Length: 366
Ligand SMILES: [Zn+2]
Image 1 (cartoon, rainbow, N blue to C red):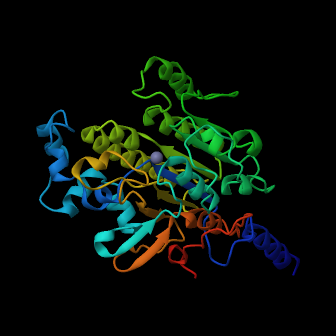
Image 2: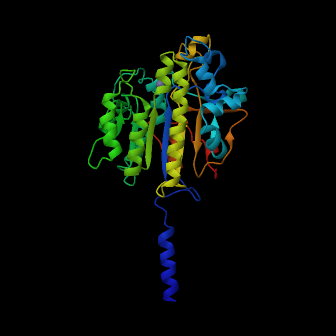
Image 3: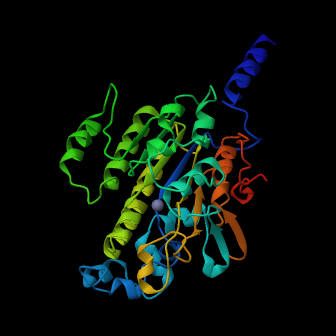
């Protein structure tokens, strides 16, 4: 009898879950990932012919066509974002293909970056967030809300290419480490790769004042994740927006491709690390869309650029049914990301303002 009791006791110990998850939910770690100003048009249709062949926007049109041209939108998008259109499309979900009637929009009034990131991370739009200035966010983000919980405290981290993220996430108040802009990796026990990135970054000119190249953001994030195993991670890639503003369609497309490959590499890493494998969900989206017509408006976004409120989102993880590209009528909103991210951890996020609802379709058991 004692032997059976001991066995029962051991089984009880090993089956205790680390937190109160709804029955059957597997996610213990959530990563929110953004590609700044990446249009739904390229995500779902691949490179646009008339832009790829325009010497005003492309230095070497023959090279770009060789990389990204194909006869159908389905083939073109697979060339542009191969991980999205293999692994993610086969085992996750993609929302916002307006050609199929599926819509995702921002609810904020501005259609540019800080209001978008505020909406993604707090779950509501705030008319006070009406510029991209370095203003400490008065709102508490879902990252900060989670970080305040004892079981997650110190297990939340953020990485961004844009130097406004320490303000958006309110690094001072939230205590969440934010490596953004041209910041180096800090702290004791830096890996050899972090030391090398710290050596390299100041020697590589960035085309922009407040935004670094995404290779630094990605590799700083990946090294930190391997070393410290944060449970909640925010990563914002920035090149897609800045190269578009520069009118460089070639660079915009190549950045989309590289970011796809980086997220794919991160996903592969997650599956190789027992701490994360089978227990980690990625939510991927963008802060705003871009204009569509006339032709030059792809470069810009904001209230005067029609269509730049149209965005997309995607999810992949152990709790998300593999529905792939969602076809048919549907409407989701940028303000739903925060509450959905928390729900993957079994947490019921709320804030002083009403937030967007959990996206139930992203879960098996709802
Ligand atoms: Zn932006």
